[in-house]
Image (tube, rainbow, N blue to C red; front, side, top):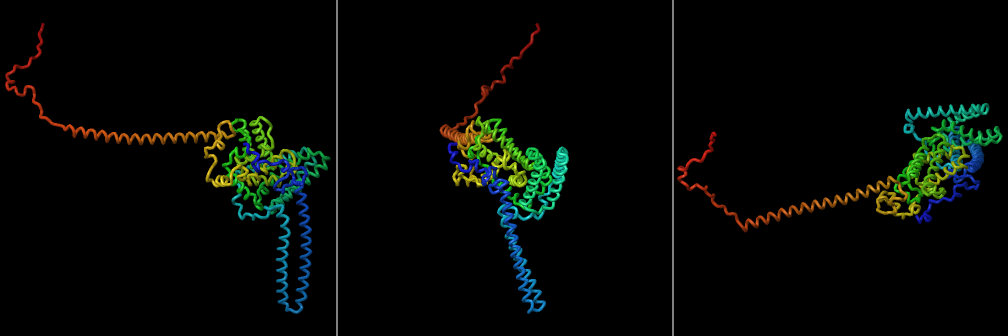
Length: 501
């Protein structure tokens, strides 16, 4: 643990979590390290530059078209009608091809900078693989109906503004139904523009009552994103699904990383700490089941609070930010949450931007993004391992858990999972039993050899005795009175007699 300060990549300065523009809000890797406000400003500037370039390109193409028309019209005076028609068609075809290529190259340059994944992945040819089961469809329909009913009941308390909010929200959802072919960033831009416009109108109506506006916007977000969830979560125009698989395989390959390698100040042998770790893992996994970005953020916040509690109980003091990030990385590695990248992108694109820029939700979400980035770039130096050991562990050729090293398998009282401690104890028992079994087998083999040698030695001794003292068979001896020839004159034997008397 003394080498903790030498580890690279675990510690993140809190200033690195803030927007690179220095506005004081939390930044995001998906926005090039900017907050949502600064990113939208940069995006708007880039889009304005793109519009100006498109206008310049259109004027250039128009001039080329006029020049081509004048050239073809002037040369047609000396050609027959048929050749004039063919030359015009050829010129127009070349012009259209040049116009299309030039426009495509210009228009997509800026968008690719801000949205590297929105145009790269081709649309899937079939929807069969993503068709939900009837039970899931019924469940989502029930949830949608319930959210819609709750939204209407909430708006009734607002009276006239509520009817206008409901009308605009329904109109926006209907308009989004015609934009399914847009890229993920374009869909995000539409939703964020609606949020901004609705928030501005509410602030004007309620004369700056930000708390009431935030409460209304939370309900608007819940209603809209529940209705649009199927079409905007992991859209086909993005490569979110591909990133999910890459992250999932990466976390699986890092299954051998121990709690000591990350310097996590958590003792899972303490029941309360173990319970907090389990709850944190449950929360981060449950994030995928939520449909509203705010609910997904709530899962991240709940997970983070359980982590802080586990650290506090272990250290008997308030947890610090330097302890939180390694523990969060450890929780993500243990949980391997489903569709992690898709959920992160969904929150980034469609959450109310004020939640991501400030408050504990924004802080915890930014730390989760940092944890994922650390996992993607994890190397041997970050874990205080040599490159050779890191590659052997990643390839599965070796595992630190199989080595009889006290640094890897600590004794009781150190920070280790109780289940891992029980497994280690059982492995030691099995190893001891294996040694005893081998000793019993060797003893049985030795006993068998000794019995065979004893039988041979006894047989040899008997044979030597027989050879030294050969057996002589004498004639059978006769009966005692065999030579008494006068036995026929002997009196009969006495018989018992009974006297009455």
